[in-house]
Length: 397
Image (cartoon, rainbow, N blue to C red):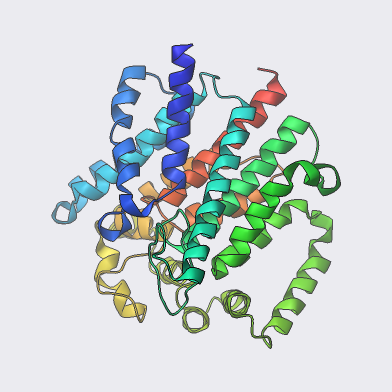
């Protein structure tokens, strides 16, 4: 029994540590010290368990590559702090997988945990909104701009992060609910039971003041869209975007302008439409044009943090030393070998046949982010857990 309780505790601790970034735990550069503390013990647990699976080989090869390639080809740029941070994330996933495969974590426990974290986000946001309305010091505030008083971070480091995380939590909640119910999620049959979950989700996503949250709300709602109806729905969405451009709804207006600019793949247009919203996508497009597999640097990279030496010259309004570009940053700095290993690992970890939204979340929260990101590993971990329970149910284990 003690083993079961310990396993459940550590599984829950890993999920919660990846899902939240309380203000008191944020260090320099918004690094989550609570998460770092949890991850620092993961190598020890991994060694104690002495267990890995054939499916871990790609991740272990990736871990070896981010250590060996800089040492062999860019010794002058080797930064052990960056590499060790990547390794801690990898070890945390491996430990989580070890514990999950012990089968002490039930779908009901997982569903309850998802609901609790989602409620916590909405509760903290409500407290923050109350503080803004009453003029009280804002609880758990981070990355706050008084010019936009209701753009609030809730339990993440910044509002856009909250929008991504809450959407991922809600998508996983719906997915696991379907597994437990053994049928498709149906509003007519499930809304009465889940009305508070939906209220918490929609309140948080629609009132936190983040354009990213609006976009991810739409992504979650795609769960209920029949693929055959995507074309007429797409027409309706595009029409709505053009209509809303003439409205004064600031957050929705930003999201729509960013969407239209993104379709052009014009980085200047994207930056002009929404500077903060383009911070991840525009650098990725720029770096995609710079990487190749025809040179030594293309295979083994230009060196750790090399992107930070020039990205601020390409993106106006960001501080010197700014670095971004998602997976293309990994390719540019470590080379194609590390890039393809991590892409393969992360995609295979979350891919589930006939589930296109898993791929959408993977692209938006993994491919467009990189490696050393809390949201990246939360996405991989939750989608992997959803997939694990799906396989478990279908194999009758």
